[in-house]
Structures are given as structure tokens and as C-alpha cells.
Length: 480
Image (tube, rainbow, N blue to C red):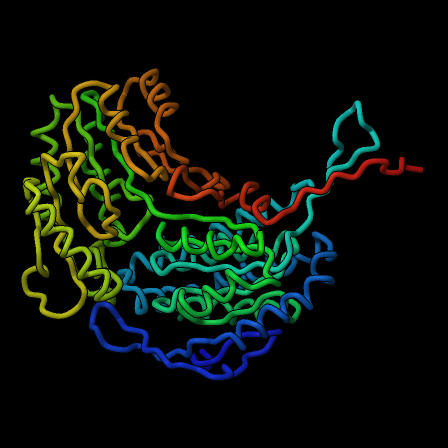
């Protein structure tokens, strides 16, 4: 890999103008694994200027040109997948087995899905048979600032970069400063694929620096951000002065509604999903709502499964969970675990501190609380760690009320063998996504939330439309 203290601007790797160096920490060891440079205003300005200059030609490029480059990128990504998995594992602590499959695999999955969507996407549409000379043109929004998080690096980068490129936008990517290595490797792949200079640019930086500079920049037409709700609110306020488009994918506090007729694997499935990626997923089902006849059994099962969940170094193969990403994240989780105890939730597995035998690394004990009330902080705040809260309910109406009693609305889950109930409950849950009986979303399904979980949709046709403006043209000349 190239010097990790360089940026990619206008088709070249360049040195930052006034760099501030930052160590990237391996969360399994608490030791530095790389040093990067954080950019400043001059670097952001140079990247935005390059994107602005390239937009004219790229926005007018034809679909076949963009498809050919994206297909080349897909080939390169697959060929270098082991490098990508190692980068992700070292920078944010995903166990190497998970990094090779779900973490790295998410990237190629999205690239291929967007290629498939682009092949048949209609950028020019007739308004309707009663208006034969009216056309609706879908055109690239312009220069896009893409700000991505650390928890699923390639998932989020490809969900933003690929549709932006596919629709004819140019862009500046600012990945999380916590997980920049995978983004720099991805940038090498972009360069290797041969995208024109200025179409894709990379500037490393933190949210207060490059992130804020992109958000307020007058030559940036759109911001696409994935991260915390707190940061999303700040971005919206900053972007308002230039009335740029803002697409937000924010936090979640998903409820998993387990009815008395749920299948025998429902509790296990929900806990595994909650703890996956060390609980660092915005769509994790962190609130387990169980109908009372199953409640005690569910608590016992969840406790046994949590105690049996292995925690280990990210470099080791296996199905264990790894560390959380940073000292800051570890401290937040420890505070919330203690707060759950102090507020009277019943601790049935895990608890404060590191797992036994671990005195280094940001490792968290897989933790389960029972008898969690809706007024408790652990039921309301996104913890972003391997912590599950269990709450009983009696009726369908009560379960829906509890599930919807949150500022978030990303993903909710339903476990029942009653198909009529499943459909009825799914319609009443206030969230952008609902999964029934363990069925994951299909290829091209839109990802996004209601309420304070955001306002955008990523993936498939919806992901392409996020980066397009709608132009109405009347008097379109007839053919011939």
C-alpha cells in the first residue's frame, strides 16, 4: 500500500498541505498499526475543486463507459479481497473470518447489485401517454461529499461511492479516521480501474475538520453521511446555509418481537444478530421483546448463549466476536452496562469489565439484561456493543407500542408463525425495514430508516435515485 499519509486528489496520490498525523490503533492490541495524515481546509478545497472540474465530462459520460469501469473495479476488488479483509480486521477489530466474509463480502455484493441496477435504470422517462412531449430526466446531483463510519467500512463506502459514480456524480470521500486503511486500499482499486482524474477523491480527516469543511462547502452539492444521530443533526444544520441535499443513515435501537408461537431458534437467532460485529451495527436487534409465556425460557436461553459466546483477538480465525473499536467506545459501553445495573435491570450474563483472561484490548463481556423497563437508559440509548435488553409483553398491541416507543426507526424484527399477524405487525412498526422470521433483505432492497434513524435510502434503484436530480422538460421534440 502507498504511504498512508497521502491523499488521492485529481487522479494522483499527493501529500497533504499542512498535515496532522494520527495513529490508527488495532483494537485487539491497543497498539498502532499505521499512521495517517488528517487533512485541512486547503486539502478539502483542492479535492472539491478537482471534483468540480471533472463533473462536466463525467456527468455527460454514457452508461456503457461507467458500467465498464465499475465492472473492472469489481474484478480488482475480488482479486484483492484478502488484502481488504486484513485491513478491516486490523483497523476496526472485526475477527478475520468475519472480515473475509461479511465485512469484505458486503463491498462486492453492493458493487454487483448496483451494476445490475444501472444496466436497466431509466434516466429518461416519458411523463405519460397524455403528455407525449413531456420528458422526465434524471441527472447527477453534482459534487458529493461522502462521509462514512468505521463499523462496516466497505459496506458503507460502496453503498455511497458506487451509486455516485454510476449516476455521473463526482465525489470526495472522507472515511472514518478510525478505519482509514480499507478506504485507502479501495482508493488504490479505483485508481487501478482507471476512473478519470477528479471523479473520485479521498481526503482523510476527522468530523470536526474535513467532515465539517465538506458539509459547509459551497461547491459541494450533496452530503451523504452514515454515523451517529448527533453528528447527523450537526451536519444538517451546517448544510442548511448552502441548501445542499443531505442524505442521512443514522442510529438505531431495533426491537425484536418474539411471540409465543415463534420458532425454536428465534431467541438464538436474535442474540447472534445482536452480538454480530461485537454489537457494532446500527440495525442490530438490541431490544428483545418476548411474549410472557415464553419470557422466562427466553431469558435463560439468552443468558446461556451469551455466556457461551467466545471473545478473542481479531487476527484469530473462528466464529468468536472481537473487540469494540476504540477506548472511547469501550468506555461508553462500560458506563451504560453499569447504568443498567444501577437502574435496576436484572443482569443475567456478562457485566462490566473485560472477559476473563483478557487484560488488553477493547474487549467487552457479552451482556444480557432482563426485566428492562422502557424508562431505563439501556432501553433508549444506542449502546453499540454486545449488550442485549429483554422486556416482557402480554399483547400484540403492547409489543407494538414498546417497539415504537423510541426516537429511532431503522430495523425491527418479528418472530411468529402466524402469517396474518406478521403482516399486520409489520405494517404498524415505525421503521424503514422489518425482517420476519430471520429473512434478510434481498439484493437491491433499500436500506434506511424513519425518525432519527435518518432520511435516505441506500441500495439498488433507491440508492441510484439518491444521487439524481429530477428535471421536467416540456415540448420534447418528437422522433423523426
